Length: 328
Image (cartoon, rainbow, N blue to C red; front, side):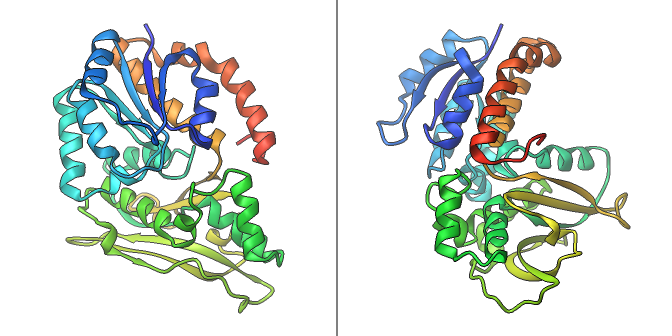
């Protein structure tokens, strides 16, 4: 017994997800058309043993769709950061609704594309570790731009290239303003249990300059420093030594360094491609498989084996077209 999926979004991530999800997808919605109705959600919930709404958009207001789906015992899997940074009370109501109805909100793809960042953080917290600091390059897009600027490529040309490769948000200004990084930082802070809001982020836009030495490079860094009440959260462009682990990223790469009680001397680092449709879609599919395993009682290994060949062939093709390093 497999999941049935209502997919929202036909862009870079949505298209990549359609290629690997196959016939699990029963209908695709374009956010430019009329929104899904309650009657359509009711019919979908009744027709499937494992109904899942997948949000592959970057649209505003989807928290309302999530609430309507969760109330009908429909799982939600999202790559859309905006609903997860809605006001804290809205976020809490969504998760309470999911718990009350025995369904999940899969969100791995909202931070770091396909990287296991949220799951790693969840495992640290679940096993009793305490996070002291998070320092991160949360935008594969801005990392790519820093790399291009390091090669003395003009910013406008670097942005055009990043957009053509599918690295940017649908509107690249979301990346350049730093808002996309701020959203990811807030999501991380909320996973720590803090009622963080976007307004809490000390945010500086991506405004590059050439005032750095040969052994230095630009890097856009997010920091989360837990403390009583609200954590200190910042996102800004910095000049770092090329030997610095945070400045070592190349191309569309994301990196998160967790300094914790256990990883105090040397932080736990999660690093890899942080932008691109194929890798983001892989995280979405991973959350779908987890929801499917939970709903149907099917061992996850069996579900993974069923789609492994299709997934590998699609990702191989997408990796070549998006210039994502092999073996991600």
